Length: 68
Image (tube, rainbow, N blue to C red):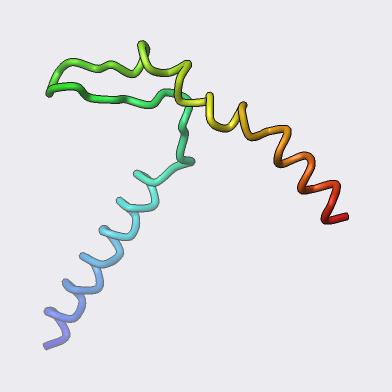
């Protein structure tokens, strides 16, 4: 019984270490946009992805000023 509990705990520790080592800071610098598997259209559409945020920047500034 003790041996099986030790194995389960060891497996849990190994899994937690693997998740901790594999986890990192998420980055959205490059957005892959797959047209079909193997064909990435991200570099072509990358300028259009920021367009809505750029267009709404003045509205956000106005709302921030009105909110105080």
